[in-house]
Image (cartoon, rainbow, N blue to C red):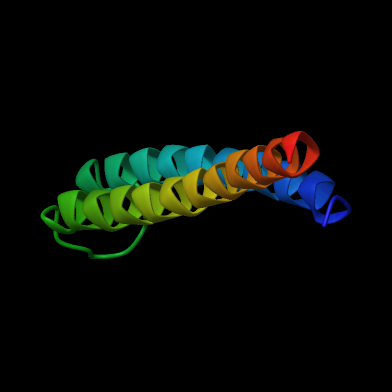
Length: 85
C-alpha cells in the first residue's frame, strides 16, 4: 500500500500544474477571440464561452487533484491507526 503514495503525490502535483496551464490557456484563447486575433471569423461572444469551458476544466482538474490529496491523507491515517493498534 505504501508504494502507491509516491505516485499519488506526483500525480496530484502534475494535475494541479496542468489545471493552472489550462486556465492560462483559456485566458489567452478567450482574449484572442474577443480581440479578433485568431485570423478567422469567430464571433466575439465565443470568447466568454471559451473562457467558461476552460474554467470548468480547471475546476474539474483541481477536484481530481484534491481527491488524490484526500486519498493520501486517508492512507497516512490508516497507517497510523494500524501502528497504534
